[in-house]
Image: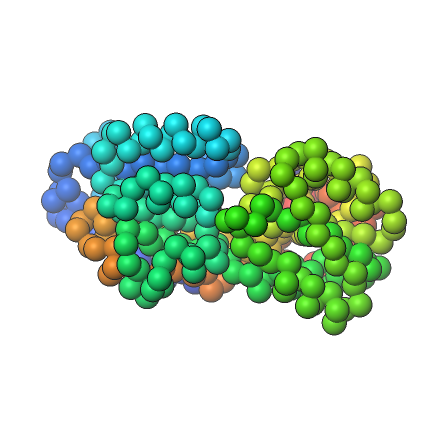
Length: 322
């Protein structure tokens, strides 16, 4: 798979000042952080590599003055056991990916600092004051509910014949609810928008199979749904020749991906961890939100499902995957 960069990405998540060697030498004592993610996909592991690289530039090196205990697993049972083991190791801070895992960790500790990555609007439920977080959680959000309308807009522009769209609805207990914004945009565009709720993979298969019976349809896949069932959803989308848009970057196999650059989110998480390890209080580390988003178009997927994307849309892409 070849990627073509359309323009260099300029992160809008704030500038970081890298410490000098003198400052780094002040962190001689080995510190410990825990890392918990619901999945261990290739893309996420690449983002974590960016996180570790940023930590090293801040003066924190694994095997030298930093220990990172990593746990990757999707089931609630796995997550519960991982959190218990993580806490038993007494970390100085915990880095968590996603809203559901963030809530699970918060239930088990209200004292150890938590840096949440990609939780989106869930921050509004777990942090009373975004500018001065109360309690033990801060972090870097991946997006917000209004993005749902943008995803539909992009999918409609890329596939003008589209007149039906289904939103793969992640369990509502923790996930950001993008559907209201999707429904509002659909009314303006004359597109019929429906939800496909699920509790497991069987629900997804049944829902997509039933939805795909009629023509001119497409799928909107939020980050939470993709993280757990992305492979299944994209396989079904190709079988039914359904164009897809996915939140977050990039999502291999999706026709369109639109969201904040994952590597940049994780590098900002490294900045927050560095501040915490150097003694900054959680309340002095505001929750950060992305201000720059990227558009990725997968031409290989377009060919596979028989879609020709207008050139006027392609020239807007930050990246084309061929």
